[in-house]
Length: 121
Figure (tube, rainbow, N blue to C red):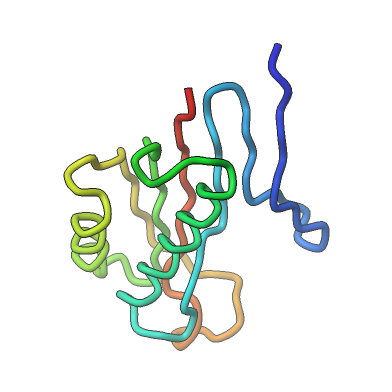
């Protein structure tokens, strides 16, 4: 049996940003550009994801599933624009949900977050 590897561990929040288990990699809590317009936050979250994947030798092409969380679900068309720009037709499966983030800033704070599953086999 392969070993489970946990990276980017945050003891204060009690979570791992990257968990490698078998041929799959689970990446959580990708955010960026908090407080900026929604498109900047979505791009910031993908930048965060891309950096984490790069740290273990992967890239966005390895992503097979993303869970996208919005403060306002009606921003899905902005997400779709960004995905088209970044994935070049090799799109992951996707789920989008609306949530109230437990984050300071309210409407002027966190608007978007994503989690991802990548394949490294």
